[in-house]
Amino acid sequence: MTEKRNTGFIGAGNMGTALIKGLIESGVYGKGQLGASDKDSSALKRMAEQFGVEPYGSNSDLVRRCSTVVLSVKPQNMKDVLNEMKDGIRDDHLIISIAAGIPLKMIHDILRRDIPLIRVMPNTPALVQKGVSALAAGEFATPEHMATARTIFDAVGDTVEVEESMMDAVTALSGSGPGYIFRMMECMVDAGVAVGLEKGISLKLVMQTFLGAAHLAKSSEHPLSRLREMVTSPGGTTEAGLGMFDKMGLEETIRKAVEAACNRSLELGKND
Image (cartoon, rainbow, N blue to C red; front, top):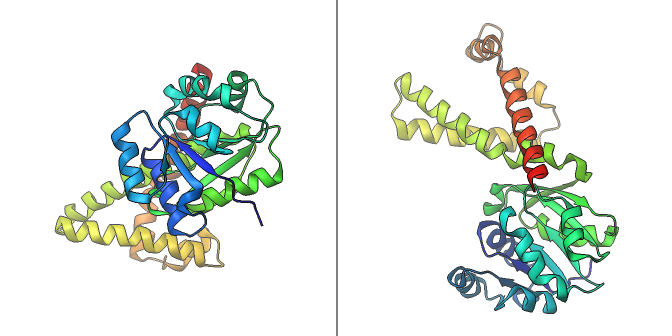
């Protein structure tokens, strides 16, 4: 069983809040094992009042008290946060970053300590404990450190392990993926209205269709292609709709969208 180290979250925003909520509601961690810091004192106060975790007045205070530190800050704030905390870093620290586009090398170069670092790309469904997070181990992260990280992120959904070189691809697929899905849902709602449905009914039908299809795909032993075939009768309505997808180039459109997001993630990483 993985040791439960005192864990602190630098950043009390949406993702930090989601992780703390998941850890407490799942019973994986107790309130006394968790803490948080944030430059926004009102956000920190709300988190402490809602979940009963320890609020720290500064990032350096948190680092001194917590052996696992989750950096849930915006990428543009990362350098300032690292410089503030680096003097308190010890050999027993585990640092986990969820900042998009920030390579582990940059964190290591600022902290100047050969300590375990793990980079994670979660996505927004973590806010309702239905996310998926990809974890990449740094040079000094052991399997035990990865187990600690997976325990944290398993509390808000599923986890996978990848090489850090794959993080731009992960960002493009699952990190940005909810945005693609929401856009598709918007289009389907509008399409339902266009063929005569009231908008509220169209919205309910679309949301439950996406939710049900995802649950079915996850629980089924069949591949996605077979599930598609099972709902597609020859000469039927689904075949007509899918035929239009093929005619309009749906597969190529989605591939190019993911490639564009991946290329942008690469560009942002170079800028940092």
